[in-house]
Image 1 (cartoon, rainbow, N blue to C red):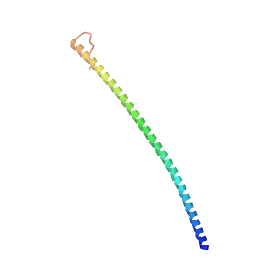
Image 2 (image 1 turned 135 degrees about the vertical axis):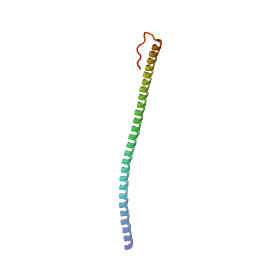
Image 3 (image 1 turned 180 degrees about the horizontal axis):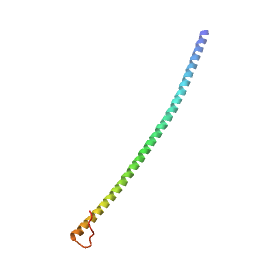
Image 4 (image 1 turned 90 degrees about the horizontal axis):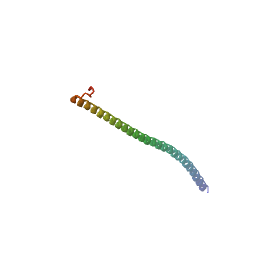
Amino acid sequence: MKSAREAAATAKDRASAANAVLYELNNEAKNVTAVLGEKTGVIGGAKDLAVDLQKRANEVANSATNKLSSIYGEILAADALLIAFRLSKIKCFIMSTEYCFPIYF
């Protein structure tokens, strides 16, 4: 009988020790899960910020492109006006009419 009781006590002690180890492992797993959750949140937040920055950069680039196109169009229109004015002065000079203004190049 004594050896059966000793075997049962040994089995109980080993089961208790295994239970304690499993409890610690479970707590560590919970800690790892919490840390991973935090890291995932940080990574997700960083990704959202990166996507937002990319969107804003595209908007700024598009706006700059539109403004440059507008300015270029205005420059072309001003150049065309200046060329037309100079051509009219040349025509005036060639025709030698008295209504011509001095030609400035």
